Amino acid sequence: MGRAFVYVILGGGVAAGYAALEFARRGVSAGELCIISEESVAPYERPALSKGFLLPEAPARLPAFHTCVGSNEERLTPKWYTEQGIELVLGTRVKSADVKRKTLTTAAGETISYKILIIATGARALKLGEFGVRESDAENICYLRNFADATKLVSIIQTCNGGNAVVIGGGYIGMECAAALVTNRIKVTMVFPEAHCMARLFTPKIADFYETYYESKGVHFIKGTVLSSFENDSDGKVTEVVLRDGTRIPTNMVVVGIGIRPNTGLFEGQLAIEKGGIKVNGRMQTSNSSVFAVGDVASFPVKLFGSDIRRLEHVDSARKTASHAVSAIIAPETISDFDYLPFFYSRVFTLSWQFYGDSVGEVIHYGDFVAGRCGAYWIDKGRIVGAFLEGGDRDDYAAIAEAVKLKMVVKEKGEVEELGVEFASRA
Ligand code: FDA
Ligand code: NAD
Image (cartoon, rainbow, N blue to C red; front, side):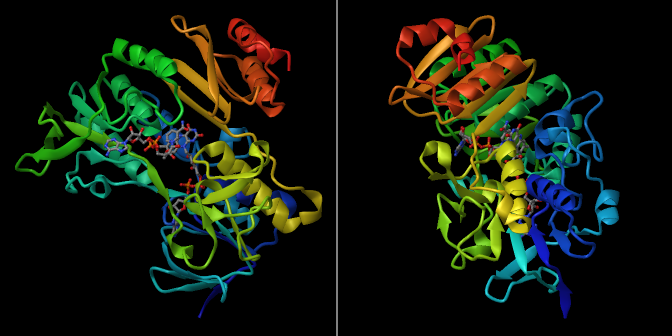
């Protein structure tokens, strides 16, 4: 015996929170909807974990950053779910799914059935062991994906004040955690295999701007290499990181951010998979019509890119795919296929950037790379397809977003370089 619901959201992260809000707005009845999450807390704005949550003073703490405050929407506390009659099944891992029978089985052995399932399982952090480094369960090695990881990271940071940290990985987690560690008076060495930080998005020129800024804050970069092992003390704590060339870096703690893998495992062999995610159509519907997928785990057609299938790992797409899926489920006649402008951002120290679109084609940089209002356009087939800006204001970001949305035609590349954001303002 088990429980039965009309709608089940599997996963309790960002997408789940935004889906719940949309369900409530569209009028779900008490007892119809349940959210199952391995985490022990109600859906929250995950980006806070590498930013406000790590601040030494007045850190962000739950319940302040439950979804959907990140979009200036209602804050959905556990009480809100109770009031709506939405069942929150927390601390519960689903260990198998059967889309033909429309059932999920939890690790404790309970069967939960649904009429419509929304998969919002997000992703897991890759582990060093998956890159051939001997796994270490030392307590001062931190990954950062969920609330439990962030809570552990904060407690390790508190023991390392004035000490040293090695950050492995030069992506989003590496950059944001390095900034947070510095703010906590910890000296940081960053190690990553690429020639510059944020290699998935930044051009060498943009990366140079950030690396110079980080160096001014005392961060040391070791690029083009990876670690090979850890040296532990008798308590099992890591004391040194050993690089491939034998260099030893003494440290009090390690933060690892080496990418993610979407949590598709429960559905492999049952649903179509593409680009590492669960393939959906413009209604977020998978190859099984009773199952939808949203957020980091979903690969969806991006109209702007000729309906190319993409899997994005960013909060804005998690929020919007979730709302769209619920609209498609409850009121299909009111919506058309998802039309999304990819949007990424980050905030570190006093810096802050936004990116819209696709980073393909020829790059034209603009602005002041010393003072910091600077950026780049990506131009493909004579049109703007991507735009990046550091240090803009609300109007600037709206302008570059619009330029990408309209795929502005570029006649004179020199003009784009000279006008910078002002070029987009003509959109
Ligand atoms: P999300 O990971 O949020 O939620 C998935 C949920 O499913 C989790 O609660 C998990 O426990 C649960 N789950 C998985 N498998 C399960 C199972 N078998 N049974 C039960 N539950 C299961 N993006 C951005 O644009 N700007 C930013 O500044 C940041 N900052 C940022 C910081 C940090 C620390 C991280 C880790 C990530 C970001 N991101 C970001 C990325 C952003 O947070 C991410 O894209 C969204 O959280 C994706 O939302 P989802 O709901 O898809 O997954
Ligand atoms: P990432 O893909 O951004 O970066 C991974 C980094 O790992 C690479 O840049 C590379 O430097 C490094 N790397 C890869 N293999 C390595 C190895 N063997 N040894 C050392 N370094 C290695 O992933 P992430 O930084 O781990 O972020 C995880 C997820 O969280 C991503 O989905 C990201 O989008 C999300 N996130 C987003 C934001 C944001 O949008 N502001 C902030 C934090 C996290």
